[in-house]
Image 1 (cartoon, rainbow, N blue to C red):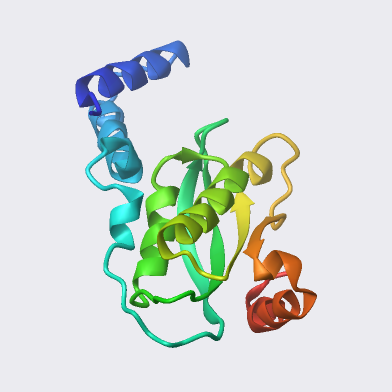
Image 2 (image 1 turned 120 degrees about the vertical axis):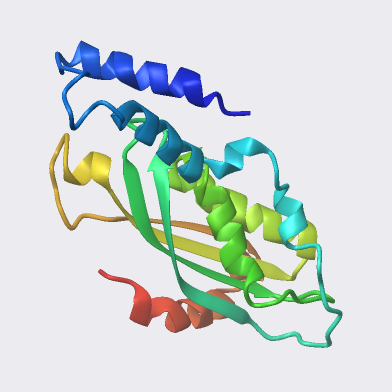
Length: 191
């Protein structure tokens, strides 16, 4: 459970450490606002939802072709600098004996975006959850994101992005399946 008071006090200390006047009109309530912002952005830490529960409603269908959900926008917080990274997820699976409702795949992406995160782990977590719960014949996840820790600090390269992939089952072993998936998401990839 998050401790808002501790977060508020901690951010107040950061402001004081920067040499800011924490009694200045614009900063008086900033620690409280920042604590509430992190509470909203890090809902995954609350433990209220289990990732598996998102995919618990399944439909047994005799559908054996690729299902692709491209261009799922997300925002997450980099655990290294606590700056945002934003982008799009492109997810596909080839059903085994069940499918899920269309909204469930974006919900999985959103679930994993709501933790202090790194893009590589998030990509893997999405794919592994779908594989574990749905047991499809293949899963493909591609995340493309722009990281504020690279665009506004450090190397300062606005417009730079990172692409991560996780391929399981037929997407990993069958080049034709992988190429078909890539052809579906190509219009959405920025570079």
